[in-house]
Length: 500
Ligand code: HEM
Image (cartoon, rainbow, N blue to C red; front, side, top):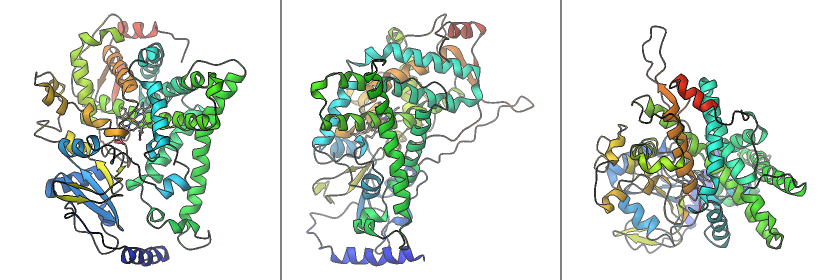
């Protein structure tokens, strides 16, 4: 055992010993048996934790409790439990954990997904509604169309680099909408910075639920840097500097463009134009809110498109056209909407959503859920529930075409889950609904997507692995992407080819 773990174990014993036993209003929810002091540390894996959480749900029920050195984690694995707690009791389940490592030490405490429930988070959500309220989205349609066409032109010109193109599309769209910045190439400085920071965030800082020993024993943050086990402080300082660059640089770009009068209208420029409003607090909120959109949109959008590619290897095309689809086609393409629903469900971009922190003790179905518990909506378990989605591991868009009563339709709509819950539900949902729809429809109209073939012409089964701790992004797989026809290629080339 390293000296770090000796120190941690001693501190843990002290921490648990000095905590006064609470008068509990019932038993804790069931869960896998913890070991003394460390709790369920060994049950929590950074790789695909949602699979373990779903196994627990099968064994113990839809509300499962585990703990890590006294920090309770609750996994909700049914529509009923997520709706009863995260949605209906949103006012007490809307907080975020005060993570010392991610928040204070790595500088993420003002990102929307990390802000505590209160004035700051309310101000940020208001700004987000201003940017992405359903009525504002049509004003982004021309921009979304331009970005989508550029993306598909790049994809047909160089299909093997589909991940880079998707990343550039996802990041590029948000950079234009939020900062009025046009990413000029796949190795654009802001795209690279964004990718590095999003990777740091999900695979290092927030890996495995994002709980570090210092989150349980905050006094560890005062360890001298020569002390055994203090390596996390050096890492945090390095990561914090990167995250600050990520918050500041694109924002400074907008400010400089506004100053020299050469700017493309964007979410930031629109809000900065009103000089009266620009107090230091407003700018602080704006800067961090803008950054949150960027980081939240990257991996989620990439995950959806990669799952769409995987699904398309399995089914035939559904759209054919002499022109590219536009938003006005949506009502006449119900199968595409069904296909998109199934892509959300089958792909599950954020399988455990993001943790919410319970602000008061609660009792649910006779089980006691202590204040401070981190509560995860297990979207994976819900969207793989065989009763709700028969043959759940198969990609079957037609499951949404069956007419059912509105209450059941809502329960079977993956959008009720994949964007999270209650007061922290994803504020980017309206933008995603437009941008992903156009991306998918245009890809269907112009591309043939199939399994790659070996030298003998036999289809190669893609090997899929997932190594991101928060987003269910498939690692790169082989696939064959080509223009549907010469005609499709011509139609695509007729779009604004001045942008690469
Ligand atoms: C397919 C794409 C997307 C999916 C599946 C998705 C899903 C999610 C989920 C599951 C959460 C956690 C909600 C919770 O805590 O209950 C979330 C939070 C968030 N998302 Fe999205 N998202 C997507 C795209 C976007 C985009 C494009 C933006 C911004 C432009 C965005 C902005 C945010 C922000 C700021 C939060 C934090 C909200 C808060 O804690 O109050 N997301 N998203």
